[in-house]
Image (cartoon, helix red, strand yellow):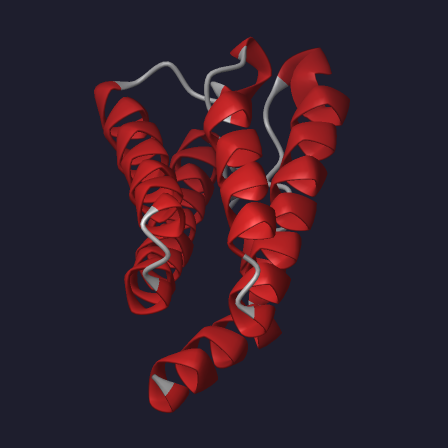
Length: 140
């Protein structure tokens, strides 16, 4: 268990990966707000994991599930983004189930899975953003 907790804590150190991604249009502030809420709930969930506080874990897993169901969450309207969102929600649901079962190892595995879904999704959003960015034509 100690090595998994160490892994989870190392992932938190890289929590900058959970920081807001920018979306197009006027949604940027809404996206930043929801991503900040996601980061906060994830950090509190990790605190609950470190303390063995299953109520804290469950409450924040529920917050993450609810956030993932909001309209502001849907930064992109693509099938791949939907897959990433569904994976995130499933990971949060696993953590909620494991917290209810008082299974700390299960929560730790779920937290690692949740974090990896964030990394994969943010990578995807950056790729889409970079691909859609118009680069100026080089003049000769």
